[in-house]
Image (cartoon, rainbow, N blue to C red; front, side, top):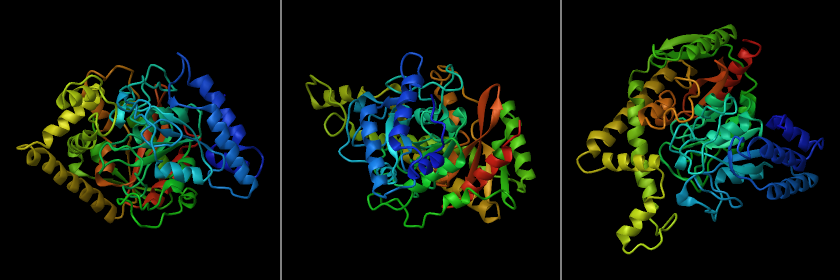
Length: 481
């Protein structure tokens, strides 16, 4: 059993009385029991309370009877488990926060509830969002709905898998270096990452504060854009949000590629690119040209330094942000410690190996004698990457098109022993986070039975241009092999 209606169709049907939020919630509960639970399940969800979800859905139906209908009326939404919720645990897939219940709720969760959305559960992720496969969860991996022997991507693998399997029409994730777009590509769904500052981070458990961004998943571009429209806008609880008008993304989704200039960065199509992904990208370029887009070769010369810069900055900020989990202020507290030092050491062993690795790397690059050599230099590179993108957009390019990932979904366990190979899964996606620009992954076909994603990037604050191009690409590919 799957949720067959998309978010827009379902919201309209609920608002018009042709179905109810309670019926939709019941369908989701059945889907989760059938597809997610048990030894053969996908393990996309870490928590789901069908009774509580049904009660919230009935409250939405009651509000509709009183004439209060929102853009997400009755739509079931899955939420990544690093976003704080009042009614379900927030664990970040870590033993450090096992069973933690937040005393407050993330702004994005509050906004989707106010729009009539029904939070049906919290989804699995790499611990503290540090990973590219959802294998670094303390509670076990999520499986790819297309092939259970493959990873769903990460760190938002649970949300991507839940949407791809049809358990929910839309979901929230977070994207620090590609953690929405990469799993979207691996699972064959749409993933949208907004500009930094477009969406509030209040209630998002911090990994790397200058890179983290809440993003959305949908089974098509318009559904993902609808959810992004609902959660966007300034927030007095997050000083990094911008007081800028939110563009009409629903209107943008009706546009097409006619007359748009699509840049093709040569650095993103190296000889090592998987042959199947290259073929699907070339087919997508042909489809865009046939739909009226103008394709232009461009260069982003500093992009070759993006991954190195990203992993210096991200680990440095992770080291700082996770210092609070010391057994005194936040997180679990190790029992029977006989001194403060022993308490901190024992408590921090609750972190998994990948989180410990990144804390150690970040502490190193911030240490005396190495700050200027690594962290300060990475920030200079970040600025040059952003300048490269700004120059291309200033020269008349509307969006950039690249592969989302260098390979299709890899096998479970294939890269867990080789961190460098795991990190390379983000080689095409980290640039957008460093430059703070919006980006999307759109399904562009399959290779060897596995989904392939094409990535689009737009200038900062140009989410409407991004959505227009993504929806246009989606339509251009309809009916093509």
